[in-house]
Image (cartoon, rainbow, N blue to C red; front, side, top):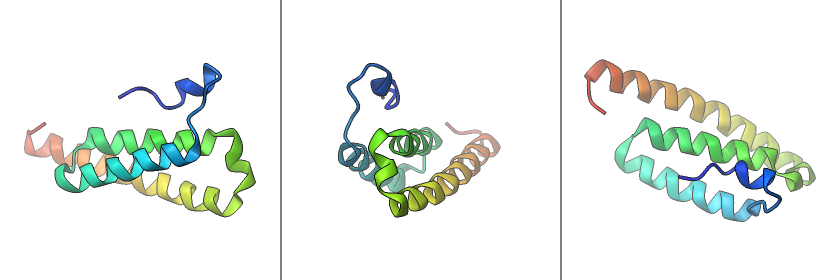
Amino acid sequence: MPNPTARFQQGDPLETDQLQAVIFYLMTQFSFSHCPIVAGEIVGHIKAILEHPNIELLPKQRAVLSSLLNQWRVHRCTQDNLTTLSGTA
């Protein structure tokens, strides 16, 4: 999956609604697979929204996304550890 923050550097950022749509899709995929890679992609996309130039206009959304980011970081690490312990990928 392409790096969502790389587009900011190229001057053609995805809109926040597009990033959110991708997050919803990834969360749905994660609910089926519990894959740490998908959890990592969710973390990357949440970070991309938080780094988006327009997010400063939405302080409440920023607070919710910051909380979600922390939760998904923990979730990603937990899934990673479970995968390592079980010996599956």
